[in-house]
Amino acid sequence: MRDAYHEELDSIGDGLVEMARLTGSAIGRATTAILDADLKLAESVIEADQKVDELQHDLEARAIALLARQQPVATDLRIVVTSLRMSADLERSGDLAQHVAKLARLRFPSRAVPQDLHATILEMGQLAQRLMAKAAEVIITKDVDLALQLEQDDDDMDLLHRTLFQHLIDERWKHGIETAVDVTLLGRYYERYADHAVAVAKRVVYLVTGEHADELQAGIEPVTGVEGA
Amino acid sequence: MRDAYHEELDSIGDGLVEMARLTGSAIGRATTAILDADLKLAESVIEADQKVDELQHDLEARAIALLARQQPVATDLRIVVTSLRMSADLERSGDLAQHVAKLARLRFPSRAVPQDLHATILEMGQLAQRLMAKAAEVIITKDVDLALQLEQDDDDMDLLHRTLFQHLIDERWKHGIETAVDVTLLGRYYERYADHAVAVAKRVVYLVTGEHADELQAGIEPVTGVEGA
Image (cartoon, rainbow over all chains, first blue to last red; front, top):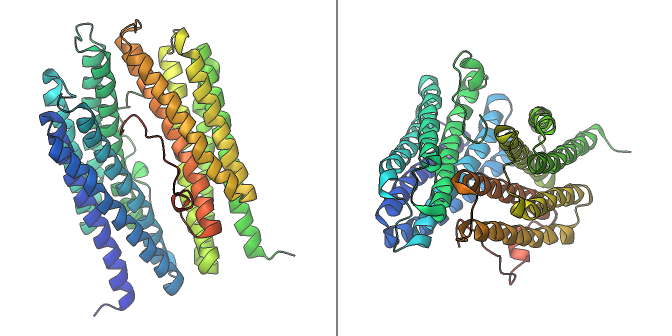
């Protein structure tokens, strides 16, 4: 039988999984809202982010209470501190899903995304949602191989992000500047969302192996994002 | 005389101030690099971010060691946990300064920012640097009034960000899409940088008062950013 302490640790893990589930759903629904110019759906995503924020506050309070009451050391301490960081990543990914939904609301009844970019944005939204689903699975299973796989999925996100930019700077771009600005920001939101999902998975790797994911992956060259290159 | 424990706590605070100093300098130099198309300066900013990352790793390791060894409770525990969060904010603001420098490098020998937006970008860069200088001062002095002032400075950043967007969507915009994309991302980098500086100050407020800065500021209506409205 587990003691109260480990039950509390487990319940913090459950909170993280629930946050990941909510922000995964949010990015999927926000993507639908922006592609369909669905105001009601956008508003429901915007409103639902409050629940993610509440979960984070609750989770942080419990983690700090656990530190104060149980004074864990070694691995247990590392789990609690890492949980605090993961909750910050998940809270931020919720914000980014909310940004997508807010852009849908801002442009309603127009569509923010031109038809010839629908497929790319849809793919970015689906990939983001899949990354977060995998991150949640990594939290549950602590599967290091799956966590490393996430980093490679993130390369796909970088490629999609580049595709988006190639469309933007193509001289045949005919959608005007405002849409270019919207698409630039959207690309950034999805890319950052993916970064946070990957960060969550990396932190689990660090918990399990004591090594940073990058060190385990020496030799795999990352595809750099557009802001750097 | 202070004991070893409080000396260690103080040294974590010193580390945070040093991180803030470095990222404040970085955003100032990155702004100069992008306005002057100065490749050497851009590269020095990109390289210097490693120092910020090292400081963060070092600071985190010391904070976790402190938790394990001293098992602080109440206020001391809150200080250590909050320091971990502040170091994450500062590390991220360093990344954003680096993004500005990378854009300068990517466009070199061209200038990423058209002449008619120089003044606005310069002002955003200066304001960002000032915000971080104030955040450092708040860490040192724990001055709650100064911390609240930062949030109002952040409203100025939002206004500058809006000005930038108004330029972009003005039908007289003549700098093409690629520049519009660059300026959109730049605006986002400065805005996010400012958000992190404000977050650092808010966390100090929380440490000092036990209340979130928002609650102390009821009645002051925030100017919303362009991504939301």
